[in-house]
Length: 345
Image (tube, rainbow, N blue to C red; front, side):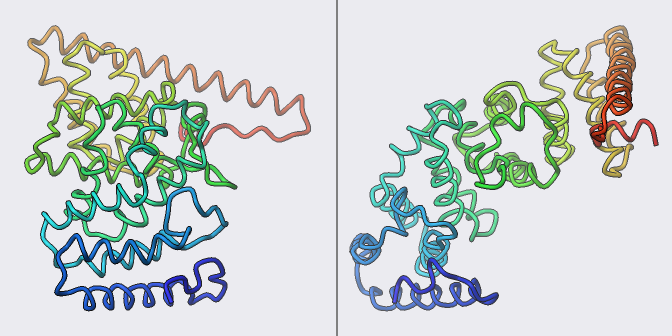
């Protein structure tokens, strides 16, 4: 009854069928255990699900296994309507049931990408069981419970594991890919959304502040090494004006004007490439300028920004020229990176 269609969801309607099955199962467990204390309800659930490897971390590696997916649907149905205190009990139960925290520690303290299967299992479990089925505020509850035990640098590592871009064909995390080459909007979309979720709810979080989020974001964009600059710019654009301005203003306040200038140039290129309104970028530059103490500092920043435009433009021209030269010497077609094309259309 519990394991229906976990490994072979071949028909096109299989996912819908699984959702209905585990919703019904969750409702059945909810009603059958209605008069029991929370701990007894969870213990009863554990006694059923612990017998099946598909619902436990690192015990089923079958391709396309829907164990976590079904468990998430079941759990959401069963605990809907429970209070926050009971949700804390659910999280503690899941940590005990799956040995979650020691496994997270192993993943976030090891070398990125070495324990790739554990990273993927943690991502699937946390996303499919706890995070993806709930609306924003409820997702925030589970996300903060997962992040809270760890220092900020490890929170950044954990956010990358949970929401970072994946590489085909085996869906490993793009630890090196994000450093070496440009990522698509879709690859960074989920990471941007969760950063916005945290930023927009800081008034309701006791353990996270604007400075905390700034530090986490700073740590994130150097994992495992400094990201490709376009990927940083694209992430900031996807996060929106508030997060983007806060990030740039903090760097400007700390005297990192060279990095701010380069980031702004790449943000402009990303906005142009994807058709975003340039008025917002102009407003953001104006806001950054307002953070300087006097006119001379503002003028110096604008001059540095102009110099960076010239520098980046020359870099791109050199890359395109080299690509065209290579094309003339080779039968293989050399295509310039997409971002470069906007300068020559």
